[in-house]
Image (cartoon, rainbow, N blue to C red):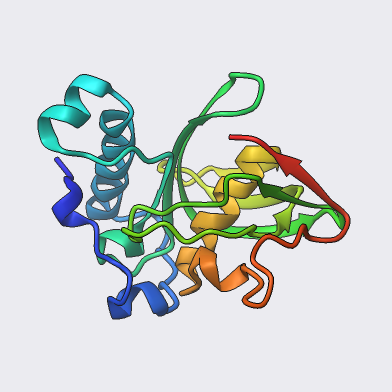
Length: 184
């Protein structure tokens, strides 16, 4: 079972490097890592389990955050309508995105960043992502709003980018142009 000790923190070199593609078919070891990542997210959202094991709640986790430099992501979160999105995906690529932007009014947080870094993080309001699942089936995910933001945050981890890299350093709370403000 993954715990907070398994999650590397800001400043670790793996968080700033580009993760490697996962070969096809997905090796069993990588599938197991992804299952553990999703299990962490589910456990972190369960008040009893998170309290018992001291887990910080998370809705997305990229393999580089557990010091595995591979292009793998787990997500477990409801969208604005309460629909649960639970994914274990390999080699995700954004293949199209909206011109319109979106940002969370509360800003973004990260399991690898212990301090609160205030500011708006501009993201695409809608994205289409191609990836594969654990069985090697190609997926095409069309996401908007919160889920679009979550997946972009995690894909950034695969490219060595942290959420705060997107915050305007001179004016952190400047609303991005052509952007929808989302509450979380």
